Image: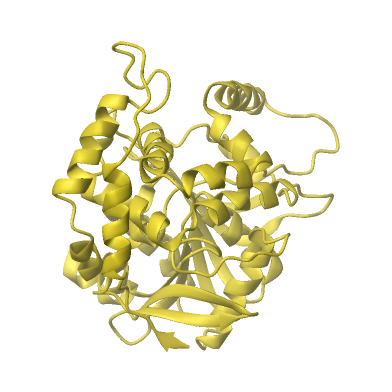
Length: 380
């Protein structure tokens, strides 16, 4: 295990600026804004900010306030943040991000979890926070072998926790992080005390001996079909041709920016104005992270691998660990509680007043409070 400091070579920063500067723009339908995808006017505004005001070094300084490490786990160099909690007995919390995010989503919530007393909480509710970058995301090494899906990531995460000296721990996640957390609970029931999710894996399907779905469950299935028809183009491409997409996005920073920004706008609680939730600096920090690490291809490849390892529970299979679900209103489509309870041991369900897909970044205080309240019953 080695300490890690984020420091992108100046030559790479200058090369990125050159590429952004030489962007070749397409035409667009007049006054179409976001109707056809990325809004050309907004992307041009973002480009100008990227060139004249965005400061990557300032973002590095913010990132490096945390304790970063790299660990060789089964031959892959895994990057993670490891921040220790206050008090005598912090609870180990393994928290995993998703796509198109990164560990950057957690920079605001981590101090709330490690030092709750600074935010009006109790020292006894603190956590040791372990926040890895998914394989092929950020500063974690990519796997160039087929089959690197959430099951393999869960196995790597458990080995990482073992190397850190944690015999038991709790887990949290959204998006891919929810799938990884679920697999951890299933694979290591003696080690994972409890699980907290703000998303239910899209491939999740409990065992049904007969089609006895409730009206709400049938309505949800219809909603999913409609959502995929209208918003699922990104997923279809990433699940089937990640390499084709990757060749394009790995070569053009503004194309990469357009691909990622549209999702932050669509999936966050922003009423169509992405900057109600994310500043240009926050958006560009995440985009730049994907660019400098050249991980857009490996990150979308996770969709392809996930298609081959769906979370479909067989007869008698379930996620036995006590589970809490935080339902943020703009996280859509989201299954009804009875559908989740068919496969998860749901003991807490919180309807959040606001927030979307990027819960830790959008509403860190709400999420942190829910984590403290739920995991309070699983401390030694």
